Image 1 (cartoon, rainbow, N blue to C red):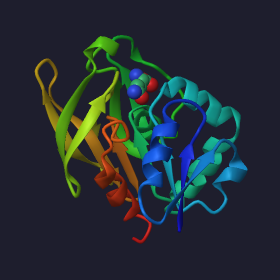
Image 2 (cartoon, protein in one colour):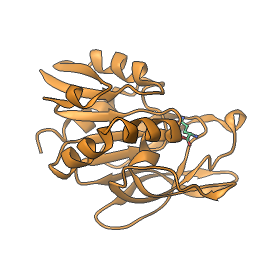
Image 3 (cartoon, rainbow, N blue to C red):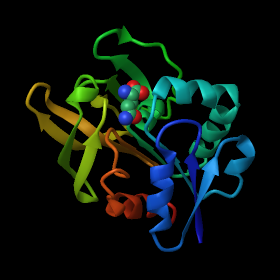
Length: 199
Ligand code: GLN
């Protein structure tokens, strides 16, 4: 059994937990405090509100521990708000520089709410390197504007208003997706992410 932690501070952690239960050999663990990270083999940072999750991460001292584990090679996947929290640089499409708290673990620049507001949310199929075609729900999603080594963009969509924009990125033991694979039940994403454990 591999233990996969799901950060359960805010957002749609339940959906990740449910899909993980369907993957053989996986035991999902809700992570709310530092002690919950003991013995986890991987960690998922879910979608939600990145400012709220960021505040809770830093106020509970979890951020330092997560950063320490990431340095040691713990596989981490961030989806939507989770991808924002992994990014080194974050701007908002409308207000620009947000100065919000992020873990700064991946060399990516993300633009929050790049596709617009809730009503501009959509489902699209993305070809993600190493995974294949993935159907993702983009809900007030960010876009990955740039990545620099050792990070690289591994998936793009061509949006009618925005044009070509990154929606997936990888950096060593970390995977950032700006959409929700848990909502569309994309188990292939989890299987690929879990392969990081044995690397
Ligand atoms: N717009 C949200 C944020 O900036 C992310 C939305 C999501 O995770 N679905 O934090």
